[in-house]
Structures are given as structure tokens and as C-alpha cells.
Length: 357
View: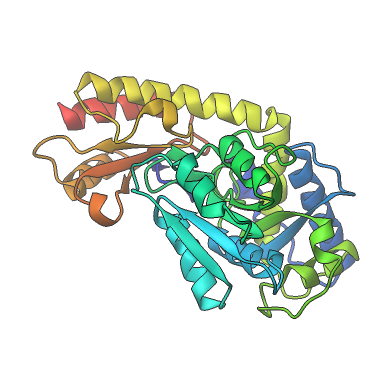
């Protein structure tokens, strides 16, 4: 039985991407790898029509968290200070990163199921103590899509730039790099872009690296990656086979219509699932209008234990995702990224009916 992943990454791969993993063995110091790396970097920028003179895509071997950590340790100057906005696990993870690297920071926290208060943000930023605000775009703890457009307006008022965790939104949601005052956005290959785990990246303004300062990390120093990658090189061994897969995934992504097409596809799939769940009285944790198209969180049916629901659906070929923290016994999460066919969607709706009936 074909198994379909409904977790927020890794995703079910297309055959094209899976076949790309069979590319020839390749030394990361050879011209063939240099060309592969260059093509991927160009395609990442093309995803949001970004100019290579202003922006750089910087490739890393690691998970999305590696990209977020690299962004925070590399894009905040020694004199800088970050306000980290938390309304879920991944915002809180950025605070852990700041603590681990001794980055000057404070946090603005709200409930995991709450909208970020613009008034509280405005008050926290008053006095211009912060060079940057760090925030998650799509907080997969709940599926909430934070309103970065509105948040960036508040940041602009106080002269703070935005560092954004776009790990679960890049390639599936609208991102306005210029209007949102973004200095950098961290993301990964294995979510909306439908690559495999192992490759992550940061899209950052080149101007950030024109002033040198002591690196806070050896492996995660984006400045050295940018210098090397602009020369067609790499400072460390990269995941070559994952790069092959990512290059093919980006080909698919661009051929199919880019982030707009992915957004429409994910929204259409999610709408069908939402309708099915609502027919059984299963409500979303937060308003669907406030959720990303990538993932929604639903309240567990009365009398259902998550593990039982998970195991029942797994036996029918579908992997769902648990809630986190204090939501772990109350909700389950569904994401509909990846190579999911119309037949797969029909099977999923049948499986939900069978399981929830």
C-alpha cells in the first residue's frame, strides 16, 4: 500500500525527484557540483522574482532549523539586538538559539492559539532598542499564518528589520521581501518545494555581509558560505544527492507555476479535508481564515486518543501529525504538501470517513 505523508515535511516525493537521487557520485569540489549549486541558487531567487544583485540565496546542508540558526547568528551584528516574537514552538526555538549563541535579545510571547498583538509589539519596540524582529511566518504548531505585512509596518515605524522563519511557507505562501522589510528568510527544500530532507537555505540581502564582524559559528556562518558560493565553491561538504533532488524539485516547482500554483493546490486539497472533517463535527483549533494553506490543526473527536487515530489512518496508508506541548492530547495536524494525486485524495477522504464514522 502506498503511504502518503500528511505531516509538515518530509513530503511524499514525486517520481522525478526520487529518480534524481540516483545522480552520479560527485565530488563537491568539481565543476559539475559548482554548476548544480549555481542553478539551485538561481531557481530559489526566481521563486519570488528576486534580483541577484540585491539578494543572495545561500545553501546549507541541514534541516530548516539549521537555516534559522544560521540566519540568526549571521545576520545580527555585534551591536544588534533582536525582539523574538513567539506564538508557537518555532518562535520559542529561535529564543533557544539566541540564548545558545549569546545573542542580545528579548522575547514577546503570546498564546499558541492567539494572534500576535500589534499594540503589544508597538509598545515593545518603542524606543528603538532593537535592530531586528525575528518571527515565524507559518507557525506549524497550530497552522497559524502570522500577518507579517501588518507586523512589518510596526517594525518599519521603529526602524527594526525583519528576520523571518519561512521554513513552512516558502514556496506555498505569498512573501513580499521588499514591502515586509525582510533582511533574511530561512527555508528548506523538503516542505512546500517538495525536495528531500538535508538541504536548507537562507535568502538574505547582500548588503548584510558587506561589513565583516567576528563569526558566531563556524559551520553556520553565512558570510563564508556566500563568498565561497559566489565563487562556485562551498566551504564544507554538501549533501550532493539531496542537491540533485532539490534541483529537480525546483524544476517541477517552476514548471507547475511557482508558489501561486502551490498555494492554489494546497488550498484546494485542504478545503476538501476541512469539509469532510466539519461534516463529522471536527472543528479547527483556530479560524481557518487565519491558517496557512500548508497545514491545519483540528480538535480531536470526543473519545478519540491521538495515537489510535494515527494508527488507524496509518493502517489505511496515511501519516498524520500530533499536536505539541499542552495541545498534544487535544489536537491533530494535517498537511497536504507533496506528490498527492487525485486518487490519493479520494482515498484519504474515504479513510477519514471510515475512521471517524
